[in-house]
Image (tube, rainbow, N blue to C red; front, side, top):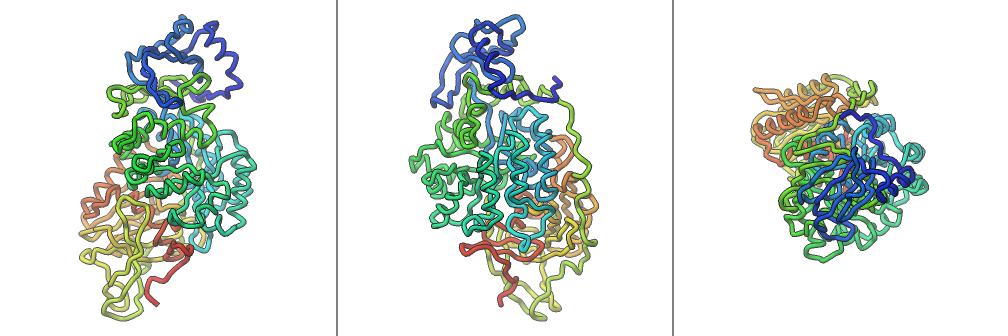
Length: 606
């Protein structure tokens, strides 16, 4: 099947055809017989139901739809399989899969994901609104119900803490939200101190969003009991994915916010957060399951939203409730429940068929906008490839080649040991810990070796804005031999980030990433593994299967070097994200995030 434009027509354009089909005067384009309907509206499973579809929308749901079947109707006998609404990801950055929107669609549609709410703030930090525009336009060519959010934090805080490739403010937000109804709102507002204390840029962006009748998403990482969470909610931000405990969920729901529970590749928060429901007894209607994010290899080996729903069920959530948290709750949060999120007359025909036990979330067929697009784990639909604009390439502009001397960390003494502020990695969580470590000094410079268990970290500005860089120390990575990893995936400013315990290897890895115009390079003294990401330095232009294989190769190279962190690359890519506690490194220096705010702090004790 070749279909360049998946017609998700507005309901107003479909009323006459739907009513005529429901009466039987016009025959359905597609009928699904004999399903056990997962009704997320009523919270029940209804046996022996059938569904009639006209074009992209559902015309009739009932025990008998024979009056809608004609000669041209495609009829599928489900044989008693479950029929559920297509799964929705309530918070995802497509770029973090290292896939283009086209290949992301190819990866997730067979897994039962038919739509999502995508914050393209990665490409926006590199290319600004033109990057967001091409992501939106490409997503429109796929079968996905893809809703985009305009990035709120470009840069994530303010230029004094990091250098990014673009700027987005209130005027840019207003422009992007005018591009169509699939521009759904404002992406996660990571500069939460700016909101709380009245920063003109952040308040202006929220105002522009609300004036457009759109939705603002949150990112609040102060503790759940902090008095400033209600202040943040007072701005109109009514959804937040930075929930890592049941208390975080409870406080947000009580304030009228939607609490998003994430199960990404490298951060596993559902088991703790879902206890707000399973132990605390809270109603789940304002709880949403999200990924935020899953790598291409995780999509290949584990799944997408099907994996998250299955995991929630394993934590004690009733299956129908878990499906609600990945369908209708998500649609209601973004005000699109008249289009997606359930199986009911008038809604888009985004339907998945599931075999076996519902708790297994075993998707056997995916229907998107009324067309069968995947069966038995494989895509059956095809569409013409989207032409990525030339300006998305060639975005890595280092000020100069990296030399070993750029990686020397000068010490405040000539020898002995010195106490250093270090970034402590926390496995399976987005936060880090500020820790103090003793590091040997040799000839007035810090000496980091594999035996120390520490690594150096360097962030080099790569957007052609001066080429500055900063250095720090990281604990908890676990390299057991001389090794270095360099990447241009370094949230959110995506400067060239190099981590390692050997200056020569670090310089080589960083320079190779620049030569590749983006990607990941893992170097040891005996081998090199590369993962090219030429689109904005963030995404591959290769097929999903190739990208997943290359991603997995980086993971294996990290493991072989002694780094045993779960999904280590995704964890390492967040060490430059200066809006998540407690300690990060940007091209401007070491950044600490505390209850008092965000500030650059010295590497050594004063």
